[in-house]
Length: 111
Length: 113
Image (cartoon, rainbow over all chains, first blue to last red):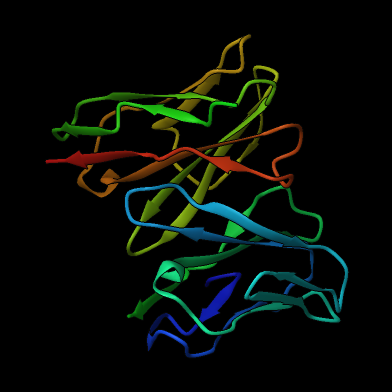
C-alpha cells in the first residue's frame, strides 16, 4: 500500500494548457515536499509546504497543502515544454523519520 | 557550490556479485540518504547517515549496507546481487535532518544480469 497516492499517473497535454496534480494520504504529514525529476537526473526540490492550508507560488506553479495536512496539490498554469518531467511528492508521516515518496506523475507538455 | 556527485554513473554486474556505490555530498552537508528508484516501486528510502552513524533505515534486506566517512562522503554496498536490484540508486544530502531540503545526485544506474 502506497502511503502517498499521486494522480494522475500520466499526463500528456499541449503547451498553454493548465493542469493539476494531486498527492493524497490517509496519514498526517508535518510537511510535504514536491520534486521534479528529469530523465537521467535526480529529483530537484521545488517547494516544501508546512502549514495546513498553506499556498505557495513558484512562477506558474501553485502548491497547496490541505487543511488537515493529509493532501497536497500542484497546479501549473499555461504549461510549457520545459515543465516536462516526473513530479514527485514526498514526506514523512507524523512520528516517523522515514521519508516516503509518491509514485509520481509523469507530465509531457507538447509544443 | 558543487552539487552532489555519485560514482560511477552506470554499472553492469552479474547475479551474486557485490557492488559499492559512492556519494560525495554538498560541502557542509552532514546528512546523506540513499534511495532506490525502480519503475515498479518508485523511489524508496534505503538509509540515512549523519556524522558517520546510520540514523534511519528503510525496509530493505541486510544485503544493503552503507557507511559514512568523517568527511561526510558515503558509500553504499549491495552484496549477493539479485536481478531485482537493478535500479537507479540516488544519493541525497542535506544540512541536518533528512526532512530538510534535500539535494539529490544524478544517481547510479545499476543493471544486474
